[in-house]
Length: 267
Ligand SMILES: C[S@@+](CC[C@H](N)C(=O)[O-])C[C@H]1O[C@@H](n2cnc3c(N)ncnc32)[C@H](O)[C@@H]1O
Image 1 (cartoon, helix red, strand yellow):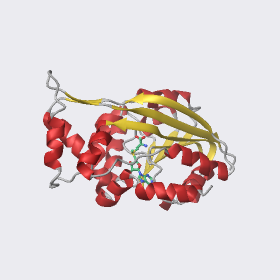
Image 2 (spheres, rainbow, N blue to C red):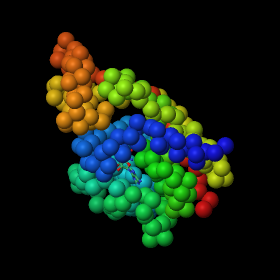
Image 3 (cartoon, rainbow, N blue to C red):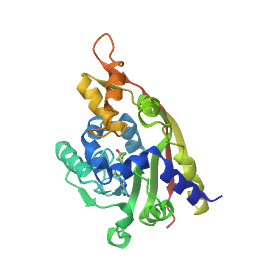
């Protein structure tokens, strides 16, 4: 199977990649604060952090660390955490979160993973990448993660996801939302690299509740990738208005399955 070709096809056609291309480096800059508000404090992350063999002498590498959803709780247990991410805005949130949690053992590297020199990084007891592996050359990205590990490597991604934003997507963009089961491609590529990982699939619910129209509209506009001056904003406005319940709240569903993939590195 040409897993690399399948991966590139997914990268080139997914809705996420299309937004990334449209917004460029601004993509996460526009979304960092919303992401920070809605994704931090995750019981799912806490559970995985408690399952990882991380102690006060451990070193951790977080690839695509974002706002520090993993780096911050891991830094509380580990000796040190290295957080790599190309988005300044996401890393700004990470640094704020680290300060409020009282941790000062996170080293931040503001760079895409592809550009990081692994020899300058060294080896880590735990390497993780959560919802951050979207690079076109995925084989090299995975091989570099494996090469930097002297212990376990973890990948977290969605195995399935359905939410209100995907449902209204065709009304705004004239085509179905394209996500897709990336975890299957990871398995194929890893297997072709001689890595035979463990995997766990668990259901998730990340339904969101907004307390005002503005909050719901702003979040939705970013999620579906409409710019401030997009003519489709009026259509979205109507769709968000329809969400309001009798108590004035705006609630959207967001459900699916998560995939955790992990292996012991032999690099
Ligand atoms: C959905 S967020 C996930 C953040 C965090 N890992 C988490 O689970 O909350 C995706 C992150 O991947 C980062 N990212 C995107 N492309 C990347 C790349 N080439 N190398 C490293 N990180 C990347 C983005 O900047 C963003 O912060």
